[in-house]
Length: 237
Image (tube, rainbow, N blue to C red):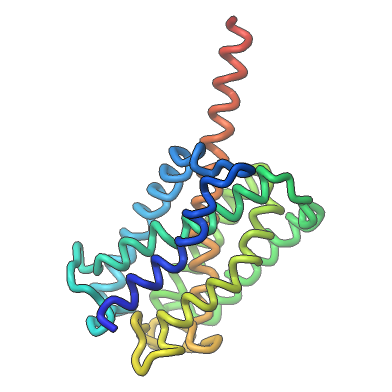
């Protein structure tokens, strides 16, 4: 059991990584933009992940870890910020590349408002709790920025998020103790709303929205910059 967290990470990325080389989507060709977007997101979120671990907002059960750690975070937590967003970005990218119908396009603004309202409700209900307050404020700010920048395929982003909620719930359920005597990742309920879906603190659904959202926004910004560069070069020629 001392490597369960590692196996959760590997299980999450196994099929997306394997399918990254399929002849239809060619996801590997966009790895530079993907890894830059994930890297920027991880640098931002890991900064307060470290602080939250130090402050006891959450922590890790050594019984399910290999042992190595850096900046108070186990190796598996660092891998988490590669494996989980990679899986999401693979799904999002493939839906775009394979031209899946953007069925949520008419509802984009309503979905934006829904997340804003939900984050405000969390903020009011849990103001002062470190996890609830932090994630609510960050989601509010992020959503406002996303609305302002208006990146393409926002409906596909929301569709990807809704689809990924199923494996997310499985993965996070394992991490929070749904199938083990003790959780791999434990939470101090004094710093959140104390409301859980199965064993998952409900704040985690906003947490994943933020993690995926930052990756998506930066990824589309990089792609847009490349399109502008190619356009300018074309006109120069």
